Amino acid sequence: MPEIKKPERPADDDCCGGGCCPCVWDYYHDQLSLWLEQEGKQPLETSSEQSSENDSVYR
Image (tube, rainbow, N blue to C red; front, side, top):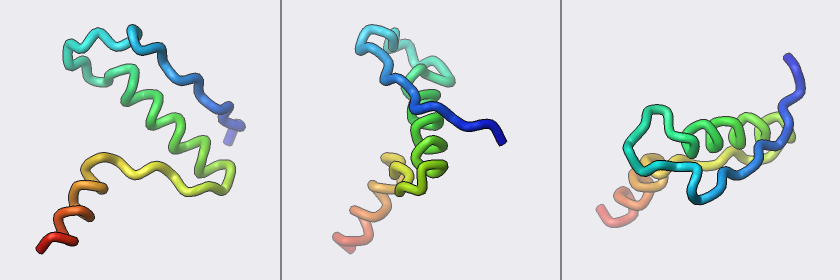
C-alpha cells in the first residue's frame, strides 16, 4: 500500500455549506484517519461515535 501523506486542512471557505456528499471536510477527515492509523496513532472519533458514547454516560 502506498504511503499516505498527512492531509492539509481545508481552508474555512473551501466548504460551500451546501451539504455536498462528500464534503471537503468528509474527505479530509477520512484521509486524516487513514494517515493517523498508518502512523500508529489513534484514529479520530466521528461525531456519531462521540454522541453515542456521551448518550451512554447519561443513561
